[in-house]
Length: 248
Ligand SMILES: C[S@@+](CC[C@H](N)C(=O)[O-])C[C@H]1O[C@@H](n2cnc3c(N)ncnc32)[C@H](O)[C@@H]1O
Image (cartoon, rainbow, N blue to C red; front, top):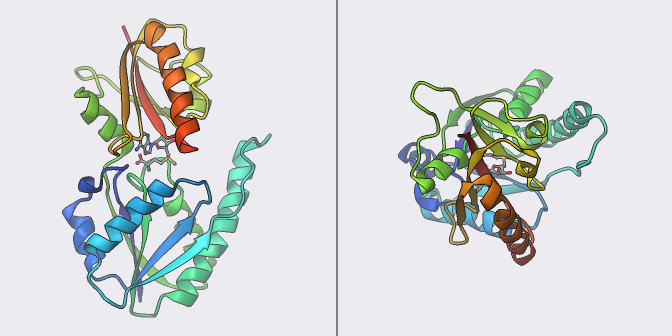
């Protein structure tokens, strides 16, 4: 049976990789790389660095594929994402069937943790449903950008016994869904839509040498974050940021 490991590699700091991930990487036969073509060269470099450090099998191969193009401003979000996943599933299916031998062990390296805003597991479910190639898989958890954000700001995510809501910028536009809201996938400072009295704990490129952290009352910090964010995005060509909004 072909074996696959879906390995969470942490959200930017190479030291966040777990012992379980390192042990899994050691003996891999194939690493599948999906090139997102988004110019995030330092992210690709981190993946390569992790592979160079921990893969011990000298005949381990790297099999790369291009991520299919995706409409970033769809009118029907769910349908567009579903069609995109279908395209990705056929690429994954071909890679697993053609590039991974019957008794070999392959891996997909996932940014952060595979359970959080990542489609790899959903896509592998689609591949399994095709019934064209049999494989077994396990999931190796990684440190998420949310954990890394909390650690760098030295804060707990929840208040005593309280819930945390983790959501996307797209959803935040509908308002604060709770007193402690973590926001991801924000292309355009969605915190500007929030008029409540909240503190923000913001981080970009968390865990990397380019990390930027800002925290304080949103009313004061919002404009500063927007400025810093625009400058950083212009400098690097891309940005990844995550933040906690905490109601006072
Ligand atoms: C597609 S999701 C992937 C999340 C990832 N699976 C995780 O566990 O963190 C991408 C989003 O994660 C967040 N993110 C990932 N890495 C980050 C980092 N190093 N610094 C800040 N935010 C990050 C950003 O909100 C970004 O838009």
